[in-house]
Image (cartoon, rainbow, N blue to C red; front, top):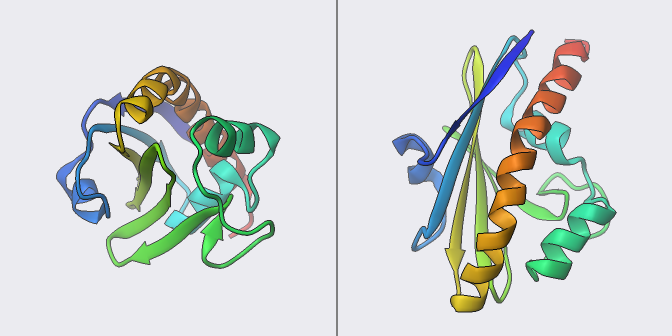
Length: 156
């Protein structure tokens, strides 16, 4: 069972503590209630898959110039982003000449939260992310709901 997605401009403090960025110029937070006991890695893979699809590669690599890792499934990468587990959550991280990005995942008994943190490398990165942030904020709730539906159907 899933409910609507909560969206906030600022991430909770615990999420901010997990980011690897020196400065945070942009952040947002999305949370969904769920009955799934899936890990942060399962949530990230359910949202983005093992390998970036054509649209993701166009946005992430083509527009944002982010460096993506490898071309196949990996324990240490999700959709081309480095994936690092921590005791309190997990991070998908990538960077390029325009921006650095962390997606921080934290699960609890009844919710999963995803925070996005972006650090700009200059005015061009700020301008491009400023435009693409609207798309990001529009897509994230749907990605969370789709992932929740997948994970709630998955055998335990």
